[in-house]
Image (cartoon, rainbow, N blue to C red; front, top):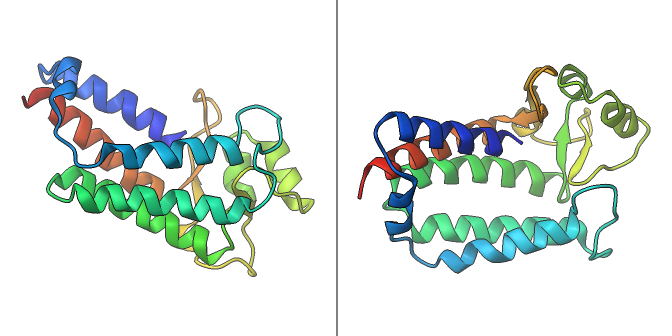
Amino acid sequence: MPLLWAVVLGLALGYLRGGRIGNLAHLRLRNPWLLLPPLVLQLLIFPLGNRGPAIPWGTAYWHIVSYLFLLAFVARNWRHPELLAMGVGLLMNFLAIAANGGYMPASAEALRRAGLESVAQSLEAGTRIGNTVLMSEKTRLNFLGDWLWFPAWLPLSSAFSLGDLVLGVGAVAFLSRRMVLR
């Protein structure tokens, strides 16, 4: 959920800077269709709610493929510096996910601090939840995993990664700047 908070903050900052949401309609991005496959794939393999994946096979593979589409979109739009920052965050997450067989390692402590005790307990019991596995000495690139957290008192609190943080900063910068530019 860090990206959701980044979008809200980016829109608020853009508005406070005198920008208009309508200015985002004038963006000239190359190959915007590259954003659709990862959205569809991630909704199919990690559906909202307690349902199982609509694609029950190859979840880890499809997760990695979804990131390749996102990274291709960033590569096609490298002239937008904020998108490059977002791309660095995506790459950080991609590396952690790819190094761990298609799943993001998450710290049980970070999940607990975010108020997600049941998620931490399920991961500790050996269950994979969505795109997440328990961070341990067996997982790789743990410094790129979900070890940061939003406090439990925030709505939609969660554990998140350094990649999510960089991605979020890029999203805030992109939205707030592009709302002002025309």
